[in-house]
Length: 76
Image (cartoon, rainbow, N blue to C red; front, side, top):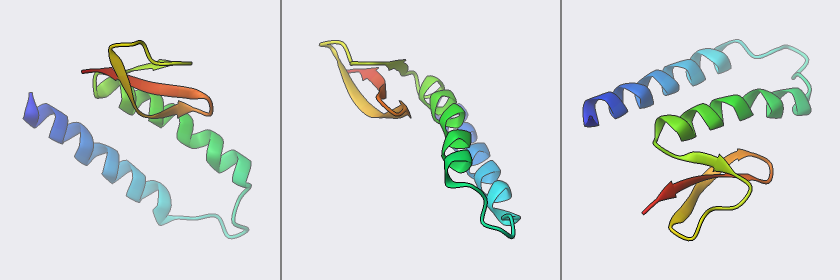
C-alpha cells in the first residue's frame, strides 16, 4: 500500500512539473489557472482516502481543500 501511495505522489509531481514546463507567454489568466488546480486537488484527496465535504464530520479532520469552501476530510 505504501508503494502505491508513493507511486501516486511521484506521478502527481511529474504531471505538475510537466504542466509548469511550458508557461504561457502572456502569463495566462489567474482565474483559469486557479480553476485548473481544483480537479487535481479533489483527485488527490480521494486518492489519499479522503472525501470532499462542506464541513468535516466529528470523527474527521481537514487535511486540505478540494475547492474553495470545500474541505478534504480524512478520518482519524
